[in-house]
Amino acid sequence: EPEVTQTPSHQVTQMGQEVILRCVPISNHLYFYWYRQILGQKVEFLVSFYNNEISEKSEIFDDQFSVERPDGSNFTLKIRSTKLEDSAMYFCASKRGLIVIGYTFGSGTRLTVV
Amino acid sequence: QQQVKQSPQSLIVQKGGISIINCAYENTAFDYFPWYQQFPGKGPALLIAIRPDVSEKKEGRFTISFNKSAKQFSLHIMDSQPGDSATYFCAASGETSGSRLTFGEGTQLTVNP
Image (cartoon, rainbow over all chains, first blue to last red; front, side, top):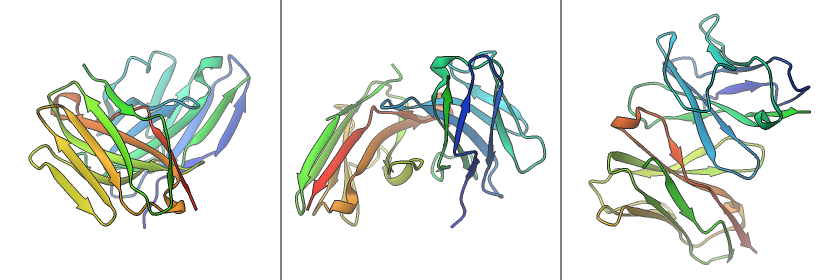
């Protein structure tokens, strides 16, 4: 079964450093997402991406965050200057079409900011 | 308006029992209600989903009951098994929210052997 692949599985970074979280969505999917889950809390939407541009973003997704699809296969989330409160699991997801059914999540990257 | 509230926070059930998890939503524009199952260290995986034109959907041991007037929906796991032990999230989405999913707080289910 096709999977959404995320790397690394765990990243530790110092406060103020830039991090890039990487995702390889399912190959024929067109819609891409980042969600995050702070430990013990619910999964929260960050951003959706379609046709090489952001289609929607949440209030969490401020100027410190950016997304990119640099080469047609990877989908990245960059946090420019990490804060302690950015520590969370970050999930990439993708789906083929506009309808919601068919979301596939990756296994996540655990980001720890120290 | 966008919130989805889920209860209970944790649930312990004996093997063979019925697990029931409840969710309530506020936004009447939501028109898709999935349930996700999450094992430790893994991403959420779609378990079952319903649209508001039906009141119940069953897939194997998993049933969603949907009450549109009350803006509530619930997941029933019949004959619960230890392998069902996981965190369950309800979610909602609709045209006005794009395709973003709004998740509930999650229920940690433990099924004792």
